[in-house]
Structure formats: C-alpha cells, structure tokens
Image (cartoon, rainbow, N blue to C red; front, top):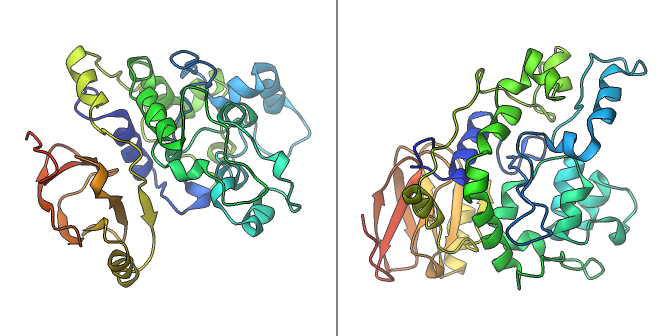
Length: 332
C-alpha cells in the first residue's frame, strides 16, 4: 500500500479482516473513514487526523466525558464504536422495519432517519462503512414511507454516487492523509499517551474488557503508520482499479448449496468459491472488465458460472485478480 501497489479500499478491507471485523457481524462490522461532507463535489474533505467523535462532539465534550465523575468506568472518551444503532441507521433503507425497531427505536418514525448523505455524515460520531463505497442498494429504500436517501446534486443516481464516493476514497487528498486515520482506528493512537492526547481513549481498551465482540477496537500497529507514496503513476493506477464501482457486491454467509441454487436462478451472475473460508462473493459480470477482491487470498479454488464468456483468472498482486473474458482484452 505504501508503494502504491494496493489501493486504499483493498488495504482498508485487509486491516478490517486482520482485526476481526467481518460482514454480517453487526457488532464487529468493517469500518471505513468518512472522507467528505458531501457539500461540494471536489472539496469538503474530512480531517483524517481527528476521529469522527472529535469532529462531531468537539474537544470540550470529550474532555467532560473523560473527566466526569458520574460514570463508574475507567476514564475514556469513546464508550462504543460503530454500534448496532449506527449500523442499522446506515442500513435503514434495505433493512426490515421489525429489525430497525428492535435496534434503533421501538416505534417506527421514518422522519427520524437521515434523509440525505450530507445529514448521514453529520448525525453520527461513528465512522463510515464500506457499503457506501460500492453498494448502491444501501441508498434505495424498500419502505413505502421512507424515501430513497437524497444524494449530492452532482450524482444523478445511486450508481453514480458510489462511483463518486469510491473515487474520493482513492483521491490524492485522502491517500496522502489516510495513514493518520489508520493510526487512530487501528494504530498507535489507540494506546497510552497518544490516545489521551488525541482524545481517542476507548472504554473497551481500558476497562479490562476481555470480550471484544461488542463494539471493540483492536490495535494492530504500535508505531506511526507510514504514509502512502503519492506519484502520478500510482495514482493513475489506483483510479483505474475499479472501472465501474456500481458492481453491487453481495456478501452472503449461507451454504454452498443455497449459493449454487442462486446461480441457477440468475444467469448473469457467477460465483467464486474461496478455499480459505466460508465466504462467498457474488458479482454481476456483464458490466465489468476487472474485479478487486476485498481480501488477500492464496488462490481461487474454482468458478461456478453460467456465463460462458468467463475464460480465465490471472493473479495480479496482493488480493487482486483479473477476470479475462471476451468482453475486453485485459493487459497482464
């Protein structure tokens, strides 16, 4: 990643995986940075040297939380991290009302859910989730009384939005500052003096917490993370790593038999089975030239496909594979 051979999206997914975060785990879902406030198309970048808690609540409130005498816990600034409430707030438009009422608010009041991406960014001190960078369906409501989320005016639809959002994540501005965010979320600024100075002391790390399944953070690095080397060549390479991010990736934690049945019902999809874990990824192939996997893999065991045009797989770097097909020639 430092040398520019791995894009920001894939590297963040690797860090999430190593720290134990995974899809379909509400209490330990992968976490990504909010990178823009959505007020203007190519500005309004978020300050990645501060946590969203600090940006949202301010230093004074966090100091009061740390020093207040009313709580019975060890001094801390942050009590939980990407809670189930925030997760379902983000997923309000593609989650059943019964589930939302269980986790967010017992009474269904559609107007209490953020109406726009701008408001979504403003309303929570939690970080973002990967779905907002690749999955347009998270923006489209399944509820008659809850409208689709309002997008920035320069994106015409949900597909355009996730493509734009992904491009912002891979932009030079974010790339040159992302190591600061990694220090806060996965790195040395979770520990000791640095955490206190940056108002980033997590309760789960200071209260003898032994079960990190509930909103826990995991420190992966104990010294400052190196910055990404930014050059014209690697920025061009990163910007072209996913040519149409509206690929609608689906993470399903179900049986092999169920996935095979799904493949039989949807002729435009193909499935890849990984040998390392019971995780299956489904891709819509007719739109794309290449696909970046979200995790490092030793090899792909086999392809289950009803799309005869898929002809070959060639490994290209850590966690990245190209799918050769008759759609387009892909340079190796």
